[in-house]
Length: 202
Image (cartoon, rainbow, N blue to C red):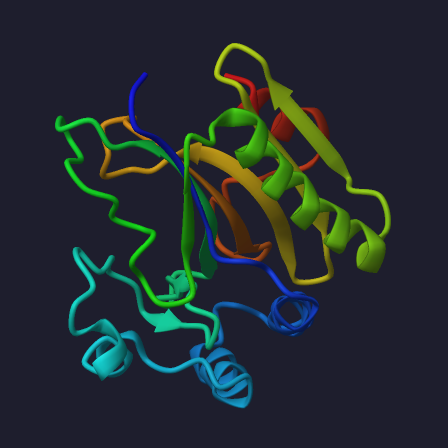
């Protein structure tokens, strides 16, 4: 590997509280979710990226909202919310010829960092949710792909802190993210018990 980087947009205690407040809602209720995000001062993505902070930012990712800290949030009415907070990637003149995350507002990237640093950022977020919610219902590790999914089953939603390939990168880099998915959505991807474990380890 060459040009290894780990980028981070930190997950604060305030952001954890905001995510848990969203997790109290039925994520299929768009009006309630939008109202809660307005209360948290999460601006609409299309408005925020037109601001001066993003004038010189390369390749701003698509999303629906931004947190004040700079996280790109996708919550588009399908009963889920996705918030990446760390990336593991290589700047090598191939798929990426420049650091795409470090220059973004709220993000920092550490050159020369790799899996241990990425996993440490992930574990710190898991600890924060564990302190608030207790032990997770599932903590699934897949050594073959070096990934981990930690989940809590809440009243209306499943809250997941996960790792996985970023979908637009052709597996060139990975993200660590907080994911909320409604338990009421038809064919929700995270069922109970062993069924969920089997899903995540295949």
